[in-house]
Amino acid sequence: MSEPAPQPDVASLLRVLRQQADQQGSTARFHEAGIVQRISDTVATLSGLPQVQPDIPSLLQVLREQAGQLVSQVRFHDVGTVQRIGDGVSTLSGLPGARTDELVVFPTGAQGMILNLDHELIDVILLGPDEGIQGGDLVTASGERLRVPVGHDLLGRVVNPLGEPLDGHGPVNAAGFHYLERDAPGIIEREPVHEPLHTGLKIVDALVPIGRGQRELIIGDRQTGKTTVAVDAIINQRNTGVLCVYVAIGQKKSSTLAIIETLRAHDALSYTIIVVSSPDDPPALRYLAPYAGCTMAEFLMYEGRDVLIVYDDLSKHADTYRELSLLLRRPPGREAYPGDVFYLHARLLERACKLSAEAGGGSLTALPIVETQRGHISAYIPTNLISITDGQIVLDTELFNRGFKPAVNVGQSVSRVGGAAQTAAMRAVARHLRLELAQFEEVARFARFGTEVDEATQRQIRRGERLRAALKQPPHCPLSLAAQISILLAAVEGVLDDVLPEDVPAFESGLLARFETEHPGLYHQINRSGELTEEARQALMTMFAEYRATWLGGGKR
Image (spheres, helix red, strand yellow):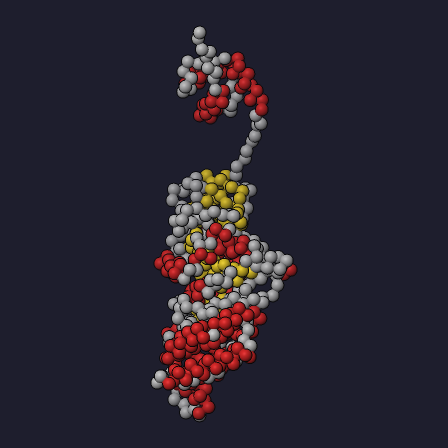
């Protein structure tokens, strides 16, 4: 008895027919007179069914039923034409429904973001290479704005401003995608800065303290240690619960790699997101880098976390925006910068704040860095940023060359809100420190010219030299709060007066070692509470006297 003929696979028939119709430019409407031959030929070519004799009326019925279920759709795509391309910028015509910040797609797959809208033309900054794009190419509007990945899985990763990984550790497992631009929190959502953010640097935490939610500018000439101050602040957040974001804007790759290795060596990379835009990247990526880093940090802030973000540096960001603006034929203003360069940084730094408990209680602390030329802090971009931020840490080239590091110029540095967040212990110890340093600088200036000074002035100069020496600190060696309190207390109470300035670092090391080993309870109490009781103060002074006697008894001065 012969076996029944196998039934044809209708789904396979329909798939092959659709492919053939697409290849022939058909609109999927078949004439019934010619469809029988088409189906017969198709069935004959199907693999696995060479001997099939199809039931043509049944197939036609199935096709009619499925065709009746089809919904006709008409899709419109906005397209434009490339008029000019080069230097990371393209000018397009067409795209009548385009919007600012909308993404467009070029034939090579590269994306661009609309930055300029004119009556006839549209200017786009490219987010990828421009190789293969030519005049006359068609560009398609996506209807979407640029978004970047956010989430806790970005911690410990090195990414570019688009959120694409650069560290070779596989794709980023993002919790979501957020727009780069977002309105800053309103006044109702904020609360005053009241928690300290310790940098681990004695001179910063004592004289220009930073609070969580503050914007503190780091300003100075090149090669004066600006990045070192910011990196030390990141390293000091280990085991504090503060998450960090470091944004490299146009920095050399070798410098960025050195920073990454420093953070890894100090076990700080695990709680830090690194956003890198190098000089050979398209200018659009350098322009978007700080906004991408801020968006990633904001996600963590709105989850109730305290976040520290470093922008290194905004002078290169302003230069990149000037470059883009001149390529886009925007009218130049002062120093050839466009008129909205102030707004460029204001809308970025305004997103840093301390949220109220009702809004989650998180905070975003910003440490923007700006470079000056020969100490000219009254230049255009530095003055813009000084007026936007809540204070500045000014690094002085002369102090740096004299070996005083961190080279903080105490007279020009200020913190407008951090004092409210300073711990009680640090406030008590550093209350008169700024005044004493200012007086020392004044009288030391006269002494340099060989002016005869009395004994009281000589004592003041000796005390100032020891204070200066006590405020020195090697790079990437942040100190705990208790260690800073003990050293500053010894300096202001005259314990160091008989120690030579060059011996102060060795004296400090021995003093801290004795403090940690002989008084561990007091050490942890100061770190935990941030307070220096009278009893604790007396205990420290007794320890200082004993150690000083041992030091001097060893023949050291």
